[in-house]
Length: 206
Length: 208
Image 1 (cartoon, rainbow over the protein chains, first blue to last red):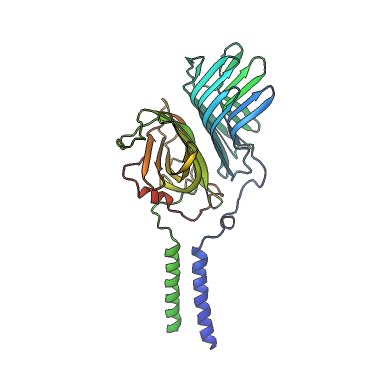
Image 2: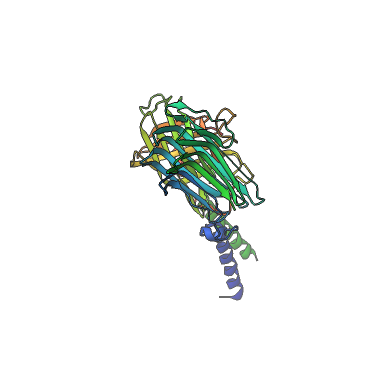
């Protein structure tokens, strides 16, 4: 085979190889390396329902914290039940967007009995977000909320507090700290300290 | 020299054919971002008066999310039609496509519509196929403050017959959030599953 012929075949092989290289997908990790955050947790996550009774906490549909600002976590649960009641269609996500993070949590058909107080809601949703400038924000909604069958109308304002003697409800509970923000659609506590229920909780931070 | 040019042309042709073969037949672009949300709506079902599963006027709750992450389809979800007593649970996300809005979403607080397609169980059993369409039209997602987010779901049986449709246009409560692309949003191989299910759809299901 002549030198020129080898050269020609080499060029052909090179072009075909380049075409295949460009068009055939490679493993994802090679396509787009993660850019942000390394392996440090961001403190961003969401939980659809967390029930604490006598110091023991059970969480339902909880994402845990994002590994970094390019991570994404999600979970969904058909239903949750326990000694205090039940909820359905629980979901929670935490999403990084490179220079920011966001989380949300939701559930439906909440039915709780806390020290004899019946608390029901059609739906609850909370979201929180933060970015790399330190800015944070969040909000929540709760629909169809009723206590012992009496409808409660949320004002939409943060930390709307309703005291019912043995039980206290905080709607759209928003807490800021140096590390970020926590938004709870509903936070129920008992006066005697034995019960603490957080409904639809979203956290975003560093 | 003429021979080299000829072989180059043949090579480019081969390369082009490889490119065509590897390009998805899908008409819909894979979404390189995420969409999440949860809430409720009163079922509106004007397009499907004949199916026994349709119960307009009933309440539905949902919590669903989808996207692509590290070269794979990503997501999960739950949906319940209270009037019907049907609880749908995602078991496998098979496709995620852009329907409208920037694709991928790259701006802060993007708005748009995405569709998630995959397998599901109903009341904990069977293999069903679903299309879930979610629209983020800004904040808040719903309610008297002017929210206008939307959610829709179609179920197919194992023979890909449509058996259920419900839409919240808009949803009555909760929120849907389209998230800006992040570096984990690398593309999986296009599956075309949403397109396949769409080819079995005989009604209008758009909310761009």
